[in-house]
Length: 553
Image: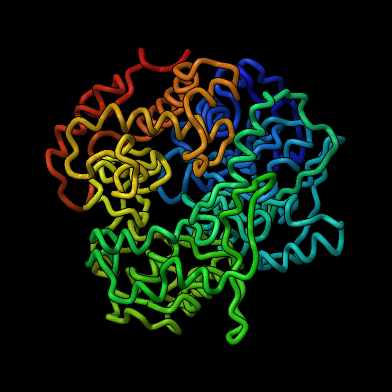
């Protein structure tokens, strides 16, 4: 089985020291990426850790496919205990950092402890440097990157940095890379901020010696030549369909369709797109560099989730307003989905849907924890009572755009996912929308009989995150291609994902998570029975607990 190569680098911020360790047995069992990050976290983070405490760890990890020149491989993983969900969580970012990371020669880099002053950690193949940067306190992401370029000649593609939101412990703060790409969901930027780390940079000339099979170029060639709508409109291309099937969350989830959808849909985004955008080595180029010269707004996006959160869910029907919200979140270092949904909750409490001036003012206040922003920075789960609105979260994570009240398998996925209401944990939506080919489609109605499908999709997504392979490769990857790429039986590869999901669940069980956390703020048909089917398919107890006998050795 082809896997990542290289030692683990541990950066002890308290002591200002580093250590390296051979982790070949873990790499062989978990490939890299999320799998390795999860196993390391499970072994090395105390189960009762404070997410914002010194004993929490941040593990950056890459996979074997970062040695490929294939499309869909420009991604990275970061793992830690989330200050938003209070559980173990992995976040995934695209861009161009993954290969710079791999060039350091490490397969994983973990941060532990906390610095007594604001620092940059510069990781190179010939050593690690701690740089005190007190003058960067409160700096935005662009300001931080300008400093790195001017003082060190370090480009944004080599960086993982935080903005004011991370320093101020906003529970959905992100870690930004390539300036506008994010380790977004779950608030790992706040973990980095709590460690007093403004950012980490990666450079070197020691890439792993991993031979990827030549068939990688078949996938790359197909990605380059395929006429896919995502190349023009990204994920927001699905918005009209979601609206048509009554599956577009609107007005803080109180409605499921949006009359102003034409102002924020795929065509609206495409009208503002001014060039192609992509990740490292990827010819699919589904990113969305957008610009409005009249209002002086330039950003990358919004993608579907953000167009929902700051668009329909906030009562906004102007794509440029949504672009501005997207740009603000990137500049301040916040997950734009959680920021948008939290702002939508505030708008609901103030009866102020569509007030874009208030939206942008509130985004700034959240990042700096000023006024009402201090309350909203805690996230919907912790502030909904103060706002007197419903709690639209699962395990503290607010909902993604793909509507579980219409796509029932996706709803079940939100309930059981270790990350909470996040669409990428299993991507069940991708087989429940009516645009899916008949031989791949799953009836969106009902939850019964979907457990085995859900388990397989969770395992496959964990495999992708361990590889690391972008989940938008789904139209190009087949079981046979996975086998060829990773030189392993497909079932053995899915077992990598199963081990990863099991360890995530077990870690969270030790923090008190069980069946009572696998809930939704709405009813689905036969939901409790479907939960039992899922637990049985996983080999877990009826309470959603991983038995010791089911733990990977």
